[in-house]
Image (cartoon, rainbow, N blue to C red; front, side, top):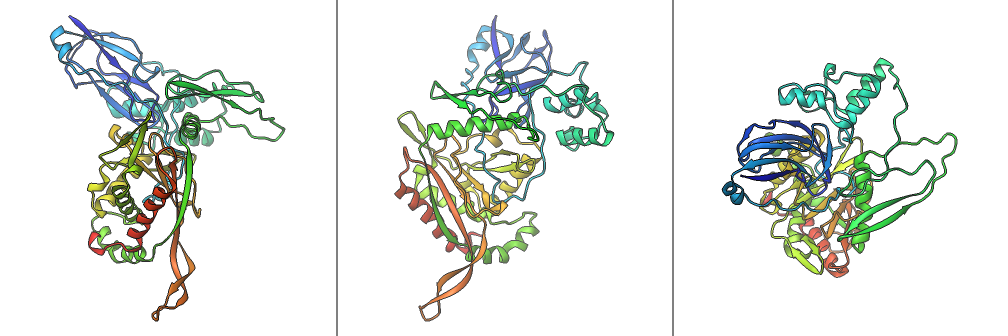
Length: 466
């Protein structure tokens, strides 16, 4: 007989750890390969994890409620040597990197609040039988921590999340309505989170700390400045997602040589096409925004200049065969962000781009994203214009080499050609686009060529594509 290790999977490039919320099998139970073995909850998604092999569950090494790093062995399955040899070796997880902290994608409106997961002790007592009951009762570790501090039974609340799951806003609203007070002050944060590791001890208030960032196999120490806290100041702990974002942004700026180029685009053609086809899209149940037009233009730009759809692997450049667009979506009134991925965007029609982006945005806000929804992005689009900004200089979403920030589309007076070919002042819908790129592999000329291509497509958008 042989034993096969069962590991905590990495549910996307931005996930460093997961909480094992429920074992679906017990020691001694027979399991089939690809049969659901346990459930996990991460910063981004909840999922059932299948068994990597057929056999008997011999050991459980991580208990329900425990939060562990990706690639941690959580159990072992006893199987025959022949079966074990036939099983594929699990691929090592990618370095954990949270999504780039930029505002939401072009096709979405301001997002609804979402719960923030964080590590906390497991609940006591048996879990309900059905998955829906377990989701509702367990919720996220942060929600369980708040409930425990205030003596609230989560199972008695009607949650607004998936399958009636209780969110952070649900529990806080209940506590506010009840007028409850915590039995004791919440514990201070346990410090900056190191990628691939659990929480580290936090510096005391007013003291400087050190954030350790893993970069290409080495560790970079970033000193956190000392901040005096005065009377009247409000101090708020960073959420786990916020800590991950801080780590990722610092890492990205240390890895890539950031440069940003900005161009101005006339959207009058797109505005007219959107007006013309908006009703027909709605008849198909799809909301048509400016987002799909922008995505189509980006796809054409990436086809023409594939260096923008690449990644850096040491001293090698990896040109990706697929065009998978990361679409940044703001959550929790802009306090947090996630970047779901619209896969194979170059194979989608305008209708497909619109439908895909809208679906991903809705899944992000309802916390129903799947594993495939959050990994494999090759280029990211973030819409700073949805919040009224003219343009932005976004930070690259590693391991990509570029990210496009789209500014607000608004009417402005510009110089146009009149019917006689002379100059005149006209009112047009205009927007600024800011492209941040990695100067290690992308030069200013190539960035300009890409932006020019995007501009050309949008200003001369073919009607037959719609």
